[in-house]
View 1 (cartoon, rainbow, N blue to C red):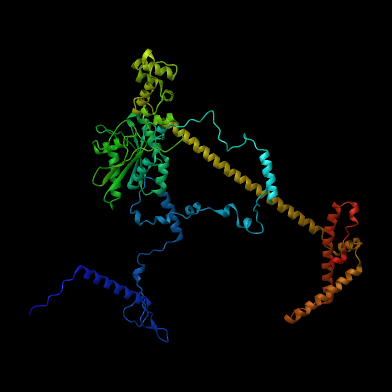
View 2 (cartoon, helix red, strand yellow):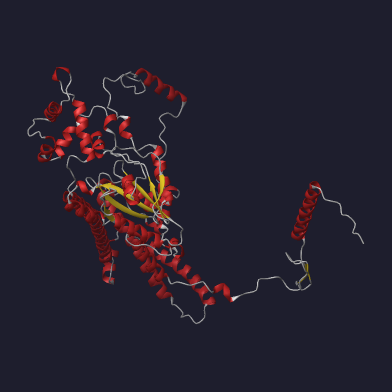
Length: 600
């Protein structure tokens, strides 16, 4: 039996079938959303339960399981606060490293105070009561003119008083202009180099800042250190003192001691044949690769000032010329990857400079700018002669005596034969040679670490003294406030004591006061007593109805209480009137008599 031949499906038929299937599936899904469950009189679902293919008798629900609670753990608030304190201390220490960082809940370490500080606390500046309630202190806008006529009058006055000398909108030609720094001295701070730097920071796990051992604090970039602490605290940061061969041993030792308080520091001498500190650096990088064993490789980024020796450090580590090297700043222009081992990659970065208030001479002496492009450079020789000892200059150039830096340049030009026609020395050319020798390390010079330590200690002491002074000022202010409050309380107590002394304690004193009341009529007092007694009787009847078992009060007791109340009210009014009479003149005393009818 031969089977019937099936028609071969074309591509169009296949597409149609696919679209039909998708359409049917979509219709089914939409119908499923629209269907509602059918319920009994008792409210139980019989058929068509939500998201269920088959009709169910019971409501669909997720079965409880104890495995949900296996990996959970409850922590006490004290334990959590202790954990936060310990982790914060460890995070600040650059010599400690967190193993299995992803498993540590570092989000708990960050307090909400940092988020709150970013917001503007308006209530700390102005409270709600001072702005919206009856105690508001908002200032009304001051309008100079409330009508068009007043406004026109002010315009006429201003136009009559106008003078060109007081007008600031007029552009005037200045006789002099402030000097502007040349564009050459802004090298290393362009947007291109900063983008390259941030690329290196983002793509590296370990950051090594290379410093010049002659001036480590001058070639340091605190801006980047702050950025790494805030934005990339998980990355390891190391300081590397390069060019140690140009500095005595005691100065490198001291600088390492000072800088290691903040970050781990290493001394280094970059050279392919005769290097120093190479083994220690490679071991440290290998330790970091072991710590990050979950990754395939680790990338190490080298950052720092130009002409510090970043690319020469990479060449010493790889034992061959991998990066372009030159004693001139700005040789490396783009970041580049170099493989040191299977699991360690090195990244070379162009030298960057953070904009500071350094002068042109300081920028030249740091080696940021090439001397050829600097222009007139004779004045920088003056600072070199100030910083360097006379003995070292005599040894390098063989000139024993000179009056000024100009005289020194003239003698050096005559010695080297750099003269123009008529024996005129080429001052700028000789000055360039001196600065070039400074940058290459031919002139021995280095910053004294002990002087830096003394100055830093003095600054810290001054800061602590200022803080103590502020604390003492606050304490004194609090003491003054407390003293004022105590004085006010004493005054209040004295006034209360005087008032209690003036009150009549005995019946004899009451009789004396009654005799002095010449203006008081006995009839008016009796009328008032009767009225108050009638009112109190009505109140007493209502109370008797509500409450049973109360003691019956007599009329005599009520009258005595009422008399005492009336006398006290009269005494208070008299005391107020006496205080006013002492201030008022004798003529006004007769007019300001108290009308006793109003009291009752």
